[in-house]
Image 1 (cartoon, one colour):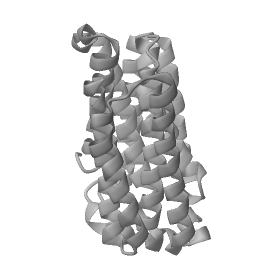
Image 2 (tube, rainbow, N blue to C red):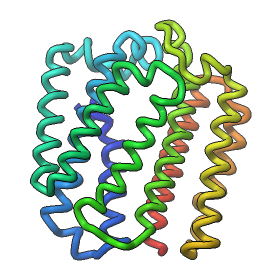
Image 3 (tube, rainbow, N blue to C red):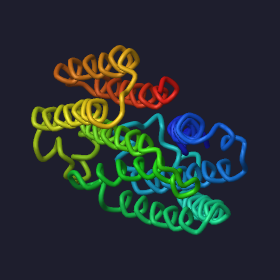
Image 4 (cartoon, helix red, strand yellow):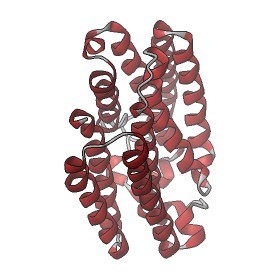
Length: 271
């Protein structure tokens, strides 16, 4: 179940929501049932999304990452669909316990995750955009439960969006073999690795520009944190991206992008 539902990725989402509540809203919010239900609902929807993704990707995953395949091996496809439906419904109900806006966002997220898994991820750009928007929403949803005028939540949502676009592009480059075998048309298959790397570097440039603009014109960010713990890792990432050409190297870059995302989230504590 931990492998199937990508527990590590869900933990990142939960940490981001609790960190936003603690550092950007009010520490007293952290102990509330409302925030617990909000994070629970987000985690359940995300877990359901990972299951339906694996359901549709059995053949591709047997080529790209055979050691991680659960659906169709240790779990039947019928059981996977049943579990997906149960988790999705539970996520919507937990969101409804917070308020109708969170429930509505959860319904939209569950539908988008299904569409992504069934169709969008096999084409260029829009699959990556879908996941980035869902990551963005997982931070912004805090506003729906705890209305606030603090603009920094939007900054961190934007940071998460851009880093997700970077990571999804890297994952596409990592999965070229299986994707090409089953007729997918992701960016590296259509453009080739070089152009996809340039596209990924473009998102890194957008992210760095976004951070600079926010710091210069809207809110002074902790420079002593961002320079060594965000900008430097992004520089290392960019250098390694240029040289990467194996599945192992792209897998390492995907992990590094997760670490950078976490470092960005942790910067809330320095504000």
